Length: 362
Image 1 (cartoon, rainbow, N blue to C red):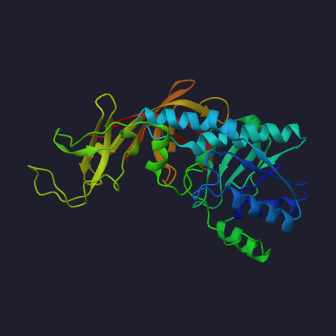
Image 2: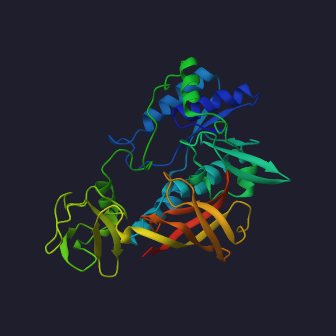
Image 3: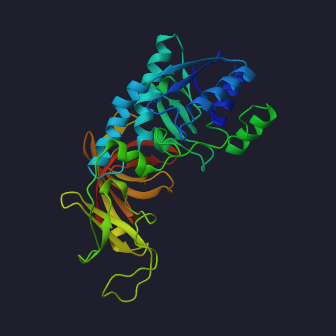
């Protein structure tokens, strides 16, 4: 049973699985329904695209509504994290709780042997254990978002696109004359779509404006609510790239969000991309999830603290079954509480956890 989103990746995955001899049934997941007739929500068109592709490729497709599970398991946690001043990554939780739990359970109940998705990643079985590997295409690898999967989930999962580059996927879609061959890739958070982020959060959370300060305590502006900002943010702060605060040395560098003090409802901003407050030498993470079922041994590994980042050398120290610390060889930029720190040993994704705190490099 293949998760079909209406996008080109899962569409080509359907054809690839059929070429490999599998009997394929497509499943379109509806995970959000509060405003699916909204101008920013593409669910209706996505379903039309998925059904059209299924007809061309020659697979049956059905739709299933996981909106209740999504709201309870993903969206509620998303709101809790933002309310606490952190910046969560709902895609990580959606994969663990919906696509590889609710969807997997549904597929198994219908008698499927495996589930498949259009993610760019690979699964390898070695000595009866399953490993999550990076995709062949480094620009599209999505193992970061899949790091919470466990042995049982991986044992039932296929990633047909893991050995291919995106350019090849587009070429196949064009050759097959799929109706969505040139459809843009979806970006952002699924339930927000293309709508303005602040407008969306305002529906669900209440916010208090507060002071915007520099590291030396000078007030340079007012924030509209801590949840609207993330560490390292440059645009949308409201200070302007050339504005300088009183008493400085003529610094005209751009402003960046550097810290949040939730207790004092204060946002701290700094000037300059490489300001010491934006650099972290180490971090602590909790809610750890390990693909092998146990944490890796203490020692040298690589890690990502955000999706669009190269693997960075670090030293891993287990603190408990669900907590660990990382010490980086080089200071890391804008390490953000709420985001995931994901560990790698070469191409093998080991798992990771949610960043709780970051230690300044200076």
